[in-house]
Image 1 (cartoon, rainbow, N blue to C red):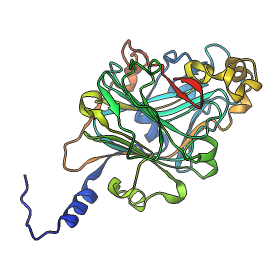
Image 2 (image 1 turned 135 degrees about the vertical axis):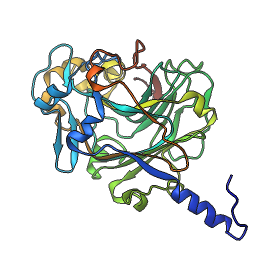
Image 3 (image 1 turned 180 degrees about the horizontal axis):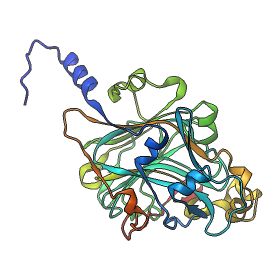
Image 4 (image 1 turned 30 degrees about the horizontal axis):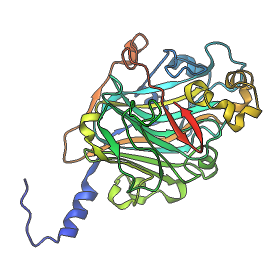
Length: 356
């Protein structure tokens, strides 16, 4: 332990420590450099979506991924009538795994609030749910606000304070009694600029996720109000105010979350967007989610991520907490999560069951 002079004011000391805490570990870059840091899944969608996840060369050739100026484009097929197993898309998982991190995603555009869609930016560990799952951006169909969620093994629940969002469910255990199966703990933003069409109309924004031993917190900043310390590359969460979501309470974070990959995907229908189709406003467009997604390619021209930057910071006082995962060359024959599929989960909001 360092011994500091008692002449140093405590406030100044804490401010110094907070400001110096985070150092850049990984800058995912743009263009091919960005995609070099991810594996492309070609496995069947574990959430039973009407989607065909394609490999990198197919995605590039078909225009599903590309560099566009200083940003990176990640989209779906919006040209062709789809056929089984579904509309072409991509599912990316980082080649590195993290335990503790400050993950900052600067987006120019996210998939719009479009019927049939189910985009997500999230983090996932092997042996689900033992190593945990952090859903940072997620929604379906014409949803207008973001939902963040955790999914864990038994013994993790959150308190209802310290954030601006609204709690949908508070027990993070995927089999918690009194909650729908696989609900986890979920917090929904009250800001209509946080997701889909509202996010894009506001010109994009930044999502910052801080994962420590004490809590997992998610902040959202519209493009016009991104903290200057983020823009300067010296992020200081202590100055950001209340997060959109803060997952803390009766939960030993370190025993429930470790070795997580960063994920992007866009699927269609499946166990959430498809499940709620008949009770959603989208039902007026088609009798089924699958039929709509299959036959209306032009509906998905706004279904894409445009990434300005993705950066991962670590506490400068700690050793690196990142490890490499399987190489891209062996990925095609290696399931992302061993034999355990990505979970399905439900939550109740506005009187509807949503499955994921």
